[in-house]
Image 1: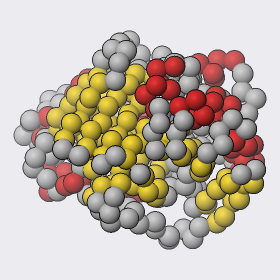
Image 2 (image 1 turned 180 degrees about the vertical axis):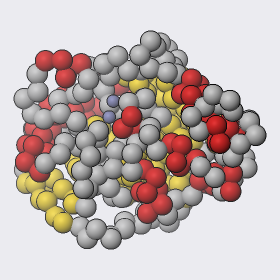
Image 3 (image 1 turned 90 degrees about the vertical axis):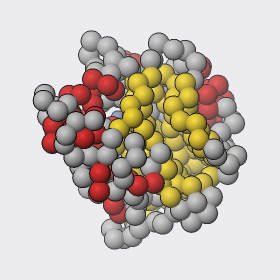
Length: 303
Ligand SMILES: [Zn+2]
Ligand SMILES: [Zn+2]
């Protein structure tokens, strides 16, 4: 794994031993990056996935992209402490390790595990449809895991919450003492998609999902947040239809600036050091706050 840290106008790229683990702090709120990559396979980055740790327990997981399964284990996380799995959208790089993660989850817990995700359209399933496609007791690909949906198979029971992306305002998907999570619909080509905002003990984190960065409601949703995880998936100079899918680096910087975020963590990163360094520099021309380009297993104290 490699760690790319951007400070001021300088960009440092430092090698990190492959067996290094970054343990999140035992107290307070931390963000851990399980997967800092996107759809292309490489040697260093799993696909999108994140954990929010509170007082030494992994409580919220956002996305379960390819590689999240092994990173979850490397992070020392447990299904027993999770209160929510939030799925941003159903592009494969955000959800393909879900079944693997939940296999034998009934050994870790018996109480229901909440899971949230977007509603569907003609091109993408809703969360409910996706879970049936995976785990339905008679038609699911992994019917062996039908216990997740109340069937006779294995798996801790899931408590699905499908968020209607037509709702223009944030929707609360988790409301516990000291921990709340809201979801907001964001534009991402034809894929219904959700950003998430996690609040705990005065600390706040927003996860952007893949998105174009063109909806001002997302800036309001991120306003004043301690830490914004923003996906930066396309290089400087991108034009044309890709801008209906992802925000260009300049737009990423504008969003962080306009939302007044305390810290910006860039993720879902481009392959190759040179395009990434160029994109980070483009972000820094707009956003002057604390900025990091994520590596897998990085931990960031929040609040
Ligand atoms: Zn993606
Ligand atoms: Zn996507």
